Length: 185
Image 1 (cartoon, rainbow, N blue to C red):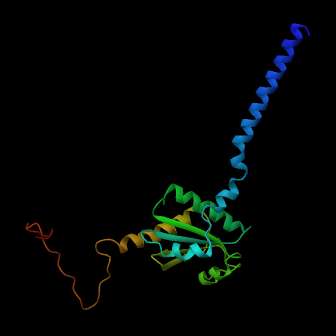
Image 2 (image 1 turned 90 degrees about the horizontal axis):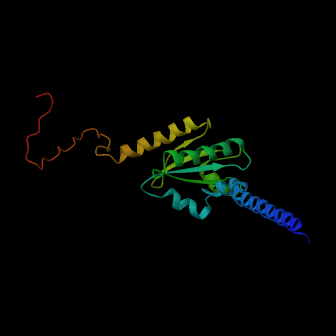
Image 3 (image 1 turned 45 degrees about the horizontal axis):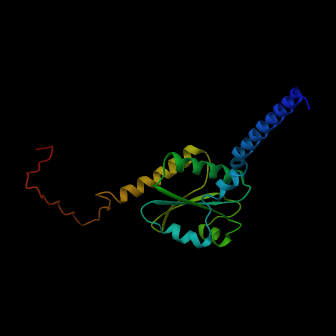
């Protein structure tokens, strides 16, 4: 075989190799995005065994999303909650979701039916403190989460106990010995 023919064959094989590597890399990089919807859907999915432990979790507000498969509002809510978790509520809110058709007994406890799904239920240390049903846009959902968080933070602040009629709060002791005067004096 003449040398110029060998060179052409070598160039063709080299080009074919480069194209094969490029296709392989593109295929490898593209693989995670092909199945990412399914992976993301399962990220916060909880089972009947997990749900009670999640409800009773302390140190945060627990948000349970009761959803229905192939429901447009449910899918929109899943997207909104994932965005808000990353953008705002990393450690403040613990989230979980379940399909009402797969866990009908949990849906019954939450009061969720096919007609009123999806629903967000909020828990603080095992106590249900509220529910939310639509509208399913980011701002109203965020406002509801903020409202529940504000209530949670007020409960754990210095003066979180409600006033009791007929009782007076004890005055704070003054460990420093400094005289404390009010602004009126």
